Length: 383
Length: 121
Image 1 (cartoon, rainbow over the protein chains, first blue to last red):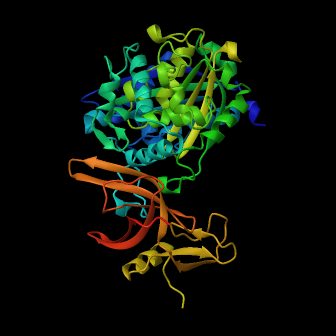
Image 2: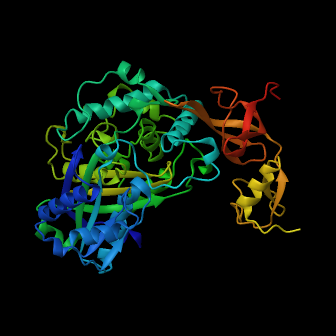
Image 3: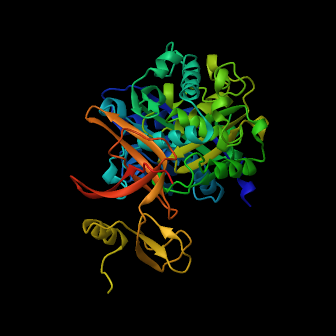
């Protein structure tokens, strides 16, 4: 049964590159640097990689491009692209492939130079014919629509959204690798230029460069490769729609299904979690996912984030790297959620370290609140 | 008389002739939008019916940019299906407002847009 994958694999290597701005480097060059760092972190050679998992914003066939660039000869590969949630899904798929003996050492990787290549979010997403006549500017149009609905349905306010941005900046100020650091006031967030009502510029994620890579292997090998393996505990996915007009309820995402699936596989409850990493492409995302994953009742997300509850020193450690809002967001952010969870579980997060961080939830979001993939990672203590 | 076209082309052809048509399954009674070859229930006996044109504003945002601003709306038609559209006559409108469809000749071709219904029924 699905519980068999609990603890079956472990992350033994992590690499990051080009976080923030990396002028002069292509997306693949940054990805390559992250992959080299991840493989070295695992004490392996690049030629040991025999499983490749990749999705990017700039390659139609990402596993082929990665394989060629890194000089690999993988025997298993998967390029499933479900947007920013791809990498949480890749954790599950890589674990299945490892467990099945289809590969022994898996590389999950991503790289982008969106900031220096133009400063706009790059997407390979094709227009939807039934939306095109109305000139939506996705993704923000879709998230603005969802925020408008959440406000109308539950009384969520722009001040609540601002609290999400302020919490993210608070964490970023503890992270030397975060791109957007420095003081940020509620007034500055609220007076930020409106982009897609009710979302202003300060409600939007950064557009940065950046690359990340992780090395995953079967748990029985993990301790030989890294002194602090980070174990795969469980994952779950859910998807109801592609285009925002087809989302059944704009104030409820498929995270209501992906979260319980991941928790069930991991055999843990929300109270067991030490760290919660949520894909915050826009401030409304954090509120939606806190509700849909069950941290607060539906409609209470706005009130949940008030008073610094998810900021440093608050009741729940959320997006401790500073999130897509203030740390890094190179187009598809999902692998950076996992990178922060690994860093925290290893106890290597410096000033922002969560005390006794043994169990983390990473929630990836792809498309226009479309694909929802939740993964749970843990230390040896959590096994 | 059967049409050689698929549902998307059929919808667009109706629109070009000034008709806002949506699909309906005779067996289940459910309406379908956007047009496709099967209903969410799986029903495939889809016929074309004229939309009543009335609906309720479900969500709305205003895209603001250097080249001006326009709203993008999601409207729940009274038949029970949702579509993306716009309310060209207003900057924005309250969610829950009653709206009425009309066909507008936009630069890229005809499209279904909505106006606020003054007489709330």
